[in-house]
Length: 254
Image (cartoon, rainbow, N blue to C red):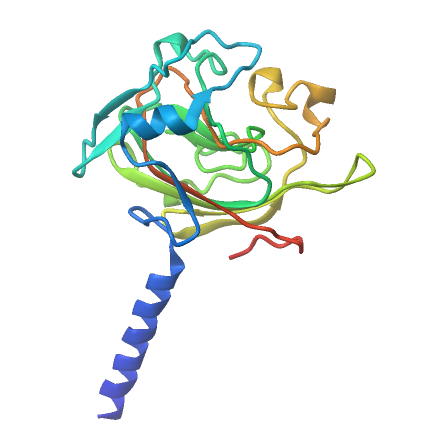
């Protein structure tokens, strides 16, 4: 009887923990979060725009196509914008019109074909990589060039994946950075990066705001949107939400 009771308590704790975790594929926006993509054209046009970077070759309205979800009911958006054909990143990337400092974000993506490439940019600066087949420090699930690839957490081609992210912006005093940006990432419910400090913006001026400043190290004290990268590949997105937070202490581990 005692063993059964102990097992029941453990099961209840597991259920409660899972309910409170708010991570992984299918996680809905919690109270206080704003939905930025729900599968509809309406929300795409209302809350996103093309990033007006030095390589922009696209013009509004956004040419990313709303498509049927290939796995579940509902719809998704395909990042394969014709202006980015051949992998011309920066040519047709989309970014939220709203800009952020500290925030919690949830993004779900599905790669349709081997080698699919895209990316999620925090503050339109720091990339969490999406790249099938690459397990290097430039590959799948990395805080790009700042961490190892947690390729083991990837669900693979044709399946939905989820990034759950808590980001703390760089801190400045008298115009000088005194604390580096920091991020924690869960990949499909697995904690893969905890309190990773980000040293710079990678990829040059075509990657995002501040990218061309001082070799990527000239980060400024301004907020930025969540950006999704068009790389000329069939990478789908759905269920994107963001919750603004204020992380006074340099700790993003959650």
